Amino acid sequence: MDIVCDKRAGGTLLQVNGRMDAVYAPAFEKECLLVIDGGEIKVVVDLTGLEYISSAGLRSILVSAKKAKVKGCSIQFCGVSGMVEEVFKISGLFTLFSIVPTVEEAFAA
Amino acid sequence: MAQTDSSLSIAADFGNLSAVKDFVRRQAKMLRVPERLSGKLELVVEELFLNIVNYAHPKLKEEVDIRCSRHSNGDTQGEMICIAIQDWGPPFNPLEKDNPALEQNVEERPIGGLGVYLVTQMADYCTYARQNENNCFTVCFHL
Image (cartoon, rainbow over all chains, first blue to last red; front, side):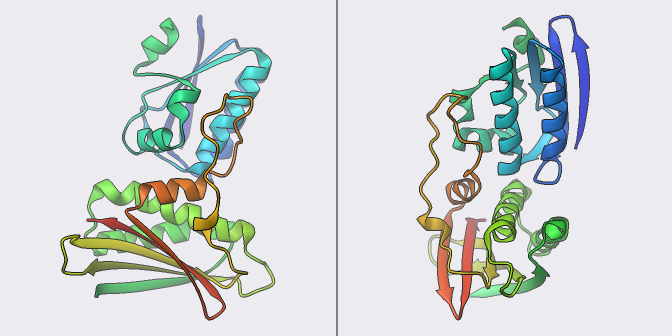
């Protein structure tokens, strides 16, 4: 898994590529918490390049979202498809989070 | 009737997760499992193997057996790919776990408890058996 962090005027974009399993999920959580703790008010997580996610990945996403809520940072997800979309649906993440198709829509929201 | 059968015995250690996944990937390829099922098979084996690593009693036999097989039962259900995972920990039936609470807000939503739920929701067939001092959990997908 690799994460590209892009600081923009409207917030920070985190592009996650590869596989978010029990081995790599902590790296996502660390990166995300670093941005939130840095005082960012908006984080957009682009999962277009994510091929696989397990419950460990969901756990890291939930930990990050909880931290964002406490810190008053909005967190949005986009580019959810395939296996990742199915896992999100089963876990009820579509009702829990703001999820839009594209990065542009996430920044416009 | 199982057409092809192969198994891996490996210590219940987090560091073995990659080896376990590699084994299942190789078997899936050998058993000509369609690509659309590869992520689901990976998820099943990750969740169930780590469940054993995290919860099985460490003083008992720390070996886990993982078996992949392709079944053709000759009825209308057609062929299935099955993963059976066996451990020698205390009795633990993942199917008896309560479903996680999903309809809550971010603050109240528990961060864990989704692994087995994902497995049971994705699979076409799941079964648990306690036999000869071991737990055997089998998960199957229609091909």
